[in-house]
Image (cartoon, rainbow, N blue to C red; front, side):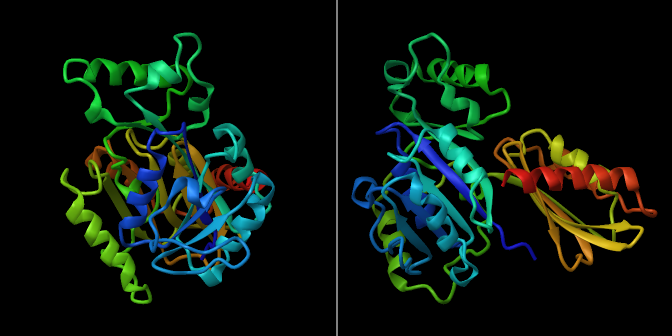
Length: 346
């Protein structure tokens, strides 16, 4: 089974709502999250939800925190947080003071830490102040070019008669430099955690301290504006026994179903030398393919996205999991090419 941990860059200008979004992700049970920041006091992550330090990250209440002074310590922090002994499901790097989005994305993608895979770039935008602080009407902000998910936050604070026009105008600016970016409109940092990482459990794992669930309950009771998450992400999944056609899998990874922000899964393919397994991930168009040993007995693919047509996506997944009728050298070369590209850039 692959031990690579997805590492997500969380970016956005001061005041856009990065910390609010991060704290909401941490307050949701079901996944153990590591966090890397360069100033713990500055971002004020909810106490008790995540704690620790870069030299000795402490696993408590579902996560770990590494606080580093600058990007020179990023690889060391990533190596510590992705170590199997911590059992983390994902790592979030909060970009305040660390690097611009493009630079941070490259540092994660080319990290020397062996168990890291890119988990996307989430860029948080203050929809109210966007045109006053980020965009003067010339070229759109370059930061959008590397974003996989753009969160238009504080939508509720826009005047009712201007809200749709303003949000549409910001989204149009994003599309000018990144037509493939996924854009979500929200308020108070509410996004479905399933867009960012796997939420495997409905409750905290049994080894977690009760303070985390108590804090979540306290925050939920204090939140007079509804639940912590925004619109739910839709999903579609397909399973098939045996080996599948590798070329069809590769084509799906390069051309995901409409509205799919994430694709994940495992497949087995038939080769002239026997079965070969792969674990595959797509995040906002970023493809990651790795070898999986032993090869799984069945193939499984899951697509996740806010605007996902589940029925249409399921049909695409079923087509990608076409049972093989024998070795497919051309299709295998296609899938192996994606694996080698992943290996050379991660």
